[in-house]
Length: 120
Figure 1 (spheres, helix red, strand yellow):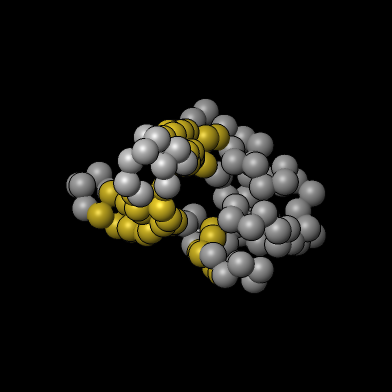
Figure 2 (cartoon, rainbow, N blue to C red):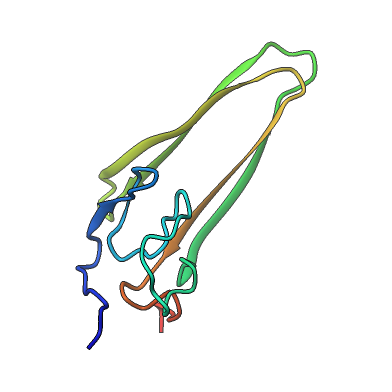
């Protein structure tokens, strides 16, 4: 008898630790990285594949007036319609400051434990 619950792909729930909206199939919260349930097949919440990885650095010039910034993530469907938009961070850069922003899109197969390749 298996204790593995079958979930519908894309179903969500709230992480009890950080209150982030996460996939119901997650064994580890991708936001706070807390373990949510024992799953011997899961590889510590590792994604099946990282479909997109982006990183950029903002450098504020020496002697210039302060800048403010907002990091905004928007998701669009195939028709170009915005399905989600969220501000994930805001702040200010003083003269000589630097910030690096990283974005990754991690792809999972529900119930696969993070081991299979979704493109195969």
